[in-house]
Structure formats: structure tokens, C-alpha cells
Image (cartoon, rainbow, N blue to C red; front, top):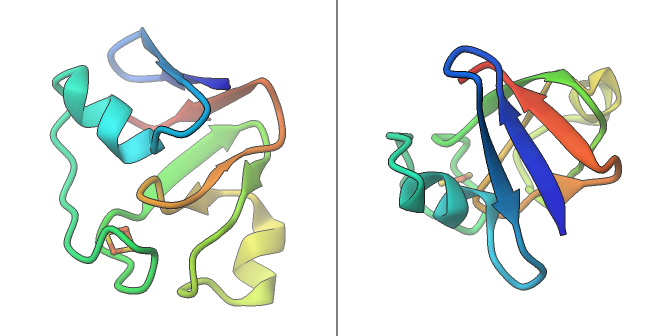
Length: 87
Ligand code: FES
């Protein structure tokens, strides 16, 4: 499990094991565009301000992964306890 801290709204959303960050954000009422929901389209790309994403998408290049400044919440998770998102 990990926590998403939403920078703009000041809200926090917990992501339990076995749930996607996208589903938890949507459940919390956050409107995010999404399409494939399997990490291939890039539609749900979300800016990460702090923390380290654990990337499971097939969209980002190695350079983009290492930059740690965005992730695909439909499949990707976190290596740090908290990800601060620009939401
Ligand atoms: Fe397609 Fe997340 S919805 S990459």
C-alpha cells in the first residue's frame, strides 16, 4: 500500500495492495482522463512532484522513467510510501 498526496487539493488517497492508483483516485472523486487502463496509451499520465514511482506502463522511455516526474496511475505504483501528485 502507498499514499497519494494531491498537491493542489491537499487531499490524501490511500492505495491498497491489489487496487490501482487510478481506481482509488476516481473513487475519491478525482477526475482523470483514462482510456486503455493497462498502461499502453499514456492518457492517464499524471505529474509526480515528489516520491518515486514504480513504473509498470509501456509508454515511457527509460529516460522518462528515470526522471521520476510522471507516472501512469492505471498500472504504476510507488517505491516510496508517498507520491505527491500535481492534482
Ligand atoms: Fe492508458 Fe493509463 S489509461 S496508460
